Every structure is written in structure tokens, then in C-alpha cells.
Image 1 (spheres, rainbow, N blue to C red):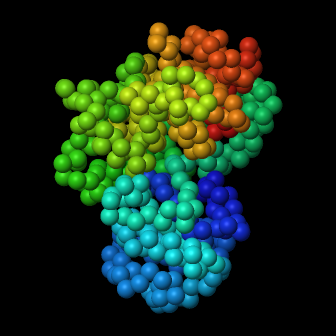
Image 2: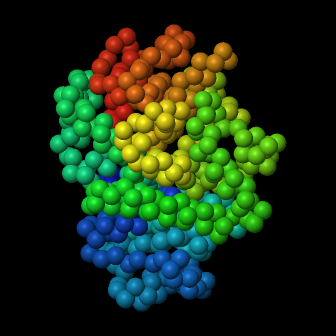
Image 3: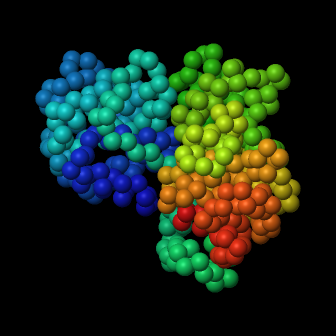
Length: 431
């Protein structure tokens, strides 16, 4: 399956300033597959080392971190010669071997012609442990997210539809109604399936939502397992409570995350480490409120007011134990959750495109779902799950801050009126 990360990997390979690359991301987002496929098609051979499946591999790095020592040993273990610029060396689950992570510094300084990619599912957690020596300034870094809707459509063989969506987005012209309806149907399927590559592959091959749900439940179980394996005993229960609470709080009208809703009397001091753990693993993302929509947005971030979204809509739907049919046919029973699901989807698409997302809320209760910096301009984004696009808060924001334009994402077709770009939800990947 095509992944957009391939273009970034190609740019890294050809860069004159290339350093060892760390590719991070949550479990099951396709890091290993993407890198091995890239190595298979762009290199003469791949030397693959996995520190989780081969724990003794770490012993190799105990003797020395010098590339002159490591390269012959790694060649022997791999059963093939590691050749500069022709072999891709892959260190998988590198967070399990501190010295392998540190060795990237010496590969950068002493053996820059060797191409090395290190993969880490829980790298953010590992690096924040005091015992890890991170090779600051000596590595390039990329993050892989679940497949976005464009990648999902391409996997489903909808190349022509993707091309049409991009064309209409660029021109601001409406999609033909039949294609608009087809794209909205794919969008709803994506909400239920999500972007985990194994789930997408199973759905494309079988169309079986029950099989997909089984895989989603397995992935969720692996996340819970990680909470036990890579977390302190004291924090395991708190992390699970926080994770369970996230999906519950998304269903509420006020989606600002509240510690007191995790448990009675819950406070930030008790649960903020758990939230940070979930964020560092890539399972969730934190979207902070900005008090003023001015540059730089980070300066106006309110650290006490934030929303939390799950990284993948399919896992969110599975965690809520919702039937795929309710998502596909927009069941009225889900009216309280539809808006949250659409917001979660949009945040994931924006994050995958490299945006840092914020939301804006006034003292009087007006609220805009997202504010991003796009092409040097601060752009407000309002999200509606259906075709009702009345947005009083967006009007208040525009009156106060006079943005170049605003974006309204909904079930409506492309349009532009009154400084507002109406964009169908399925075209969020174009932003």
C-alpha cells in the first residue's frame, strides 16, 4: 500500500546533509513495513535488526559504539555485507537498546556514508527516561501516523476520485454530485475502519467490518500491554483510567479535558504524567486552547485548557464498541458523538499533514474547533458532522481577528462565500 512517508524517505536518502534517521510513531502504524518496502525498492540490500524479537542483539553494542567495530559484527549477524550507500541498515524497536540509540551519534560523525534508519514505537517514552542518552543534533527525525483518507482511498483503488478531489480543492469548484456522494461514503467507511494499515488491508480485501474490528481490538490490547510493560507500576492504573476517560469525555458537549471526570476528585498532579505517557506513545494528541489568535500561537497557549483526541478514528470507534453500521448510516442514536468523531478525524488529518493544532475559545463561550498556521497565515477551522454549517463562533472569531479566510468542514460540497471556504469532510487531507 502506498504511504506518503515514502517521499520523505526518498528526500532523506538523496540529501547531501543526511544523518541517521529516527522514524517514530505509535504501534501498528506501518513503520517497519514502510521502511522495509523502501529499502527493498531503493537499495541493493537491507540489513534488518529487531531488538524486541532478538534481545541478545543489544550485547553487540556493549563492547564498543564505534562504527568500525559495529559494521563487521552487524554484517555477520545479518549474513550479508553492509555496504556504504548500497545497504539500508534498520534498527527496529531501538528504544529497547540505549547504546544502539547512542551509536547513531557515532555513525553520523564517523561513518556518514552508511544509511541507517532506527524505528521506535515508544521512543518518546524511552527518551524521557533519564538513563537514555539521546543523540541530539546527530539524527534526522520523522513521524509516521495512521493512514489518512487519501491513502485509504488509494488503497481502495480510488485514484481517479482522489485526483478529482484535489482538483476541486485547488479550484474551489463543486464535485459532481455522484462523486461527492461516493466520496462521503468512503469517508464514513474510513471513520469505522481507521488508518491502521492492517485494518485497511483487511477491509480492502474482504469488506468485512467484523474482521477489522477483531484487529482493532487486538491493537487496543497491545496498547494496554505496553502500558504495563513500559510504565511504572504506580502509573499503570492511572494511565488506563485516563485512556478510558478520553473516549468518554469526547462524547460530552464540553470536550475540554477534565481531570475530575477521570475519577471523583481527580487532579492534574495525579494524572498529568499518565496523559503525557499517552501523548509520547502517539496514542493520543493534546490540542491546547489559545487565548489570542496571534503569532506565535504557542505563546498564547493555555496549559490548563486542552482537548485530547485519539490518533485513529477506527480505534476510537472500536473503543466505544460502536457498530460499523451506525457510523455508515449516521444513526440518530449517535447524535451526541458525531461531532466529536468528525473533530477527531479532522485533527488526525491535520496532524498527519504536519500541522500543530490549537483551538480558540473566548471568555464568553464562543469556540472555534481548530486554529492552524497555513502558508504563513492563521486560519480558523470549524467542523460540522453533517450539512448544517451555521457557525456563530466562527463569525465572532472572524470579526475579532480578520483572518485571510476561514475553513468550514462539513458534508456540503466545495464552495466559497463571505471569506469562508466550505470544504467537504473527505477533502481534509488536502488542507
